[in-house]
Length: 482
Image 1 (cartoon, rainbow, N blue to C red):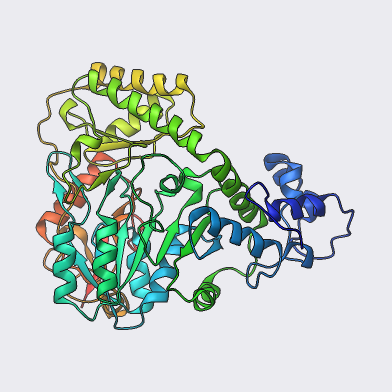
Image 2: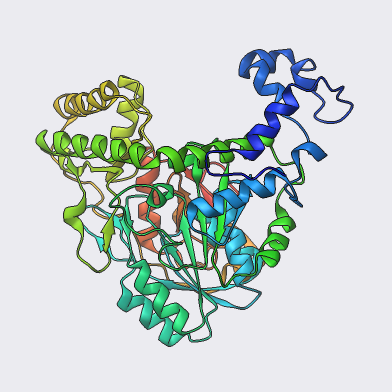
């Protein structure tokens, strides 16, 4: 087989060869290159449909890669500084769950911040692992959860020496980083694995003057969402592992739940994204930071808004900050973040990543254009002028410390009853309630429902946040322990 370098894309090259091969397809998928579904073909394109193929010898098989997929994964591992890399086509949600399923069995403890993505707590329901939550720092003005302080992580480790792993967000949705390198040192001294959710940290591996990536910090595993900031197609992700992790066992874990019909469109996008990042990432992310820094400066000149950045760093629960994140606090213009989010979309044709009760987040990349950045800044100016008011009666915080009564698995599978959310205070939740995005649970299975939480949910619904997680799709009722 050919010797590949970072300038190559093995799976992409095999796909090109396959496209030029006039083979008769008496296999799946049944659309037969689009001929069997012309409306879909016309919508997404003939070439896209032709490349939506099934596993075959020439294209390898993700369940047991031995040729071009194997080579593509090896190049990804090399590019990201990992021992091995695995293509994941079920999203970074699945990659996070594979990490926890690798590190923990039923009854094992895992230390994690409570402001994790829902995928991590879902993994606890599946595995039966027991969470040891480290409450993140909170910034009352901004209303956002921060990182974990080293002191709090060390305390959790000392109180739970039998914990198998520590999970760290690197960075959080809002760009906040914990002291990952120090947490790795503390964990490894205690024979604990370090798992890193890097859904929003692809650029840490290729940009200059970025916070340390999981692999450079010595972490054991990292779930990296290439589609968010790395240029691959939505739902494609990488799972990276370090030197002390058994890659064969990880592969077995992945095959427990990953599809046996992996999308070649997703996989080839990972292959090409890795190539592009390796060759052009430094330049791409410099442009991204320049855009974000410029927007921060101009937004702060408007008054009322606060586009925050590195000035927040305190060496503790804000150990570092991701400058590519354009997070803006909105409460001082009298509007919740979700209200600004809706105005931007409905009145100005600008779709940003999220709006919560106090902030908005715009994802900036090298794929943006200066005109679009200027349009965003101008829209915020107009929103302030037309809709700004005194900041009275607005919720002043975003994170509520949980009271854990039962493990997520025990609570989720226990006998339950349905109550109106407004009457549920004092009961133990058996399902999730969260605003999505960002997908950080307000309530998770096994947690006590309080008056404060009920009021928070009511306020979030009133302001127009997109709530998910409960069996009741209207989010009016909630399941609790009987």
